[in-house]
Structure formats: C-alpha cells, structure tokens
View 1 (cartoon, rainbow, N blue to C red):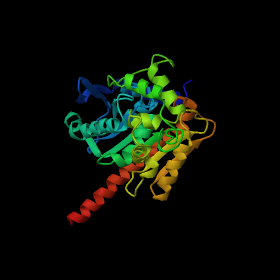
View 2 (view 1 turned 180 degrees about the vertical axis):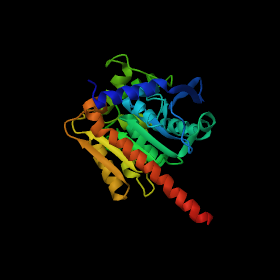
View 3 (view 1 turned 90 degrees about the vertical axis):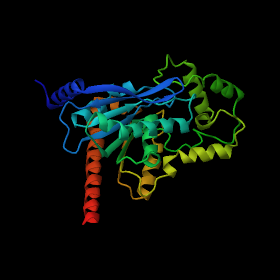
View 4 (view 1 turned 180 degrees about the horizontal axis):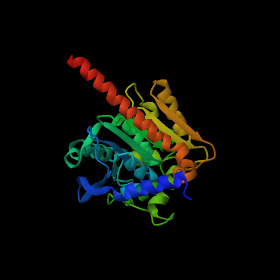
Length: 332
C-alpha cells in the first residue's frame, strides 16, 4: 500500500514531467551563447502571475550545468507549488573571474525581468534565488549584488560566503608559478555547461591545488601573480556576503551539514551571524553529521529542505502585501 510520501513523490514527478521546459540564450560572449532553462508549471497562472524560483547550479565555480537542476527535487517541488523555475548557466573559472560570473547572473536576472513576461504571466515581485554549494554562494551574493534585489534567498551548504578566510585566500604566501601556468593554460576557451571527466581532470586538479595552497581566491580574481594582495583581498571582501549584509538584505534560509568536507559549515554560521546583526529574517539550519549534497537524501529532504520553500512562500507573499499596503497609502 502506498504511503503519503510515495504518493506525493509520484505527484511531484508527474507535474515535473508535464512542465513546459524551454531553453533560451540570454547573452552571447564572443562565440559563446550562455543559456537558461525556463520551466513553466502545468497549472494555470494565478491572477498575479507565477512566482519565480531562480536557481544557480553548483560545481565549485569550475564545473556544472543548468540542466542538472532538473534532477533536483527542489526543481520539481517548485513546479508543484506553481512557481516558474529558471535555471541558468554562467561562465566558469578559470576562464572567468568573479566579476564575469556575477555579470552573467545579473544578465540572466535582467532577462527574467525583461523577456520572461513576454513568455508567461509572471510576478516579478515574488522572486526567490536558490543555490547549492558554489551556486549557494552566488545566491547569497545576489542578496546585495543583484538589482532589483530578490525577495528571498535560499543557500544550501553555500560556498564562499566569506572569501577572506585563509583556506580560500592566504595573502602571506607567494603564488606558485606552476599554478599561474596552469591557470593561464586553462583560461581559454571560456566554457559553460562543463562537466569534469574525472578527478584527474586538469580543472579539478587546478581547483584542488589552488584551494590547498590558499589561492582559490586569487584564482577567482586574477591570474597575475604581481597583483598586490591588498587588491585581491579588497575584491574578495566585495564578494563576501558576510561583510556586505545591510538592512535591505532579503530574508534568507541557510542549511548546512556539520560533516561537510567541501565547504565548512562555519561559512553559513558566519553569514547567519551577519544576518542576525542586521535584524534580517533568517533561518540557519545546521544539520549534525550531514555532509555536502545532503538534499540528495530523501530522508533529510522533508526535514531540512521543505521548510525553505515554506519560508520563501511566506516572505515572498509578505513583501508583496507590504508593498501593496504602502502603494495604497501613497495613492490615498
């Protein structure tokens, strides 16, 4: 006999299969078309238009692809809630730097505001940005870098919430010439939709060596070993959400496992402290004994991922209600 959880999974899978998925090019850089996927729920749009679930894939900023999001339960669950799902590609390191990557995220976000309404009824006052791992790091950066700001941010095991930690950038050690040579060799062509061939893949090795040497932050900013460490650190501070939360930062849901060996859970703890200091509504869900990609485990999903959707729904709706109240007030 089917239990309720199995029935729910079947219903969600059916909705995902019925969704209308289309791929669009949102920008071109040189000969590279950078694309995003739009998944429209099979249910009718509400009178105010579909809310938007804007997702950013992970992969350490060196690999990954937008199409991976289709396999996440987050994708199918958002559709089941009647939200349009946007999944984006972006240029990857070492062929791109943090500025380039964020520019791609902003351009995709701009496309959502200018082109998506031509495709489907959409509520641009109800946008949640979600990411996992490095995508989570970009999601939390979006809370102060994107314009207009999203209404909600969700970061699962968010990487690089604070770029200034020594494991990401140690300014007191020189850059190994071999690291410079490898970075320059792999910097062309700029690639999106990249997936590693193995753990010996040159880009994976480069990332591992850079992180072990405390130079991942350097790799994300420049390939020039002569750039002063103060200049590198200034750029990394600019991309460290822990140092840039302000009173207008969106409500945020963070979840991170204590056994994560790829991204220390202290990254999410630090960000939670920054949000608390500015009185930003937030949830910090620290999961004892869980590692990276904990949301791939069904037994953890309902307890630690589903609440993020409830959080997003609540705060997207409340922000819309607050705006409506003030609009009526000023119109009176």
